[in-house]
Image 1 (cartoon, rainbow, N blue to C red):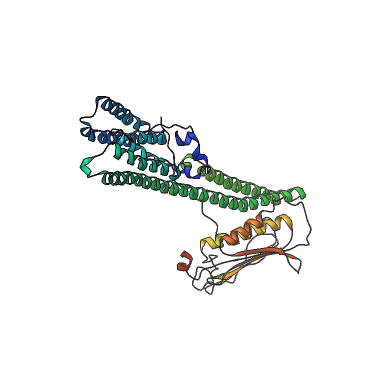
Image 2: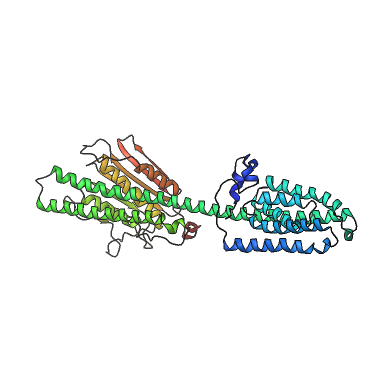
Length: 453
């Protein structure tokens, strides 16, 4: 059983490194883990390296006294075997083998492996003193076990110091690379978590806009049935149908958001699978604003829409939706095209811009239904590429109040955030004329290339 000390060690307490469990043991966390296949391969190579270094020095031990030779052989075997414990006790292995290598030659290979292991698995404040200890043991080793083939003690010290520093630098480079990879992985995980958080916020904002609209429509139709029990059968049937349709749409939207939230919290997402996405259903655009107004009018609201934006046709005129006829049916679209055909409501606004404008109008109409029931509402949408899109929703404040629909007051806050995220602005509040006004401005790029940039 072994433990791994990751780059998280660098964030430990300032003096935690001085604990005996950290200096001599497994880092003090007590969390042994099994070696991976890669760990077994690396540890085997380290064991073989320690044995090879020991075997290279066997020839130099000819003529040594028998007791010293026996001690050398025993300590050499034990030090090579101890290499298998380098992950669990890296500092202890390095210190013991370094001290033993002051006089014993066969321990040198294990000492080099211990120095490399400490440089990889421990911060510099721990590995640095171990490296200095290795350099310090060179002096007594060269003096006690001189090597005449190198031409004196100084060349031997220089060669030994070069080998130790090279091994230590190699370990430092490996540790730095691992820390870099770990930090990049953590940064990617953080970015993925932030993306999921932003997506959840976007979903919550969309669901507030959609569900608040649907539920307020339900409340409006149900209130009409409550206060007009003697209404004609046809009107009651129409209101009941509207309630059923809006309830169905609200349930569909709710199922979608639950499905998305389940997906973002699934095991695939936790594993960092960024390729799987939940397809979104078609989002509303500026061309859907007239249908939204008509839906509100069918629910009994008095809404006038002035839509003055370039249409998809090259010379498409603006579109104005006039108030409904007394029976609440039909939408008058004016003016007609020169050839006598009706004007197609297909504004050429980008999808993102149209969606934001649609949501602003939708939430403003929802607020008007909640807080100013029966008041006439005027919706004005105008703009052009290069100048931006202006959205205004105005309704009187002093109106007869029925049973008000409760709300959390987060709708206008969400609209402000939506407009700011799109690079625009939104303001709301009472005017000097006694109206409540929601006014937003959204940027509209002059061309598609600018929009993509």
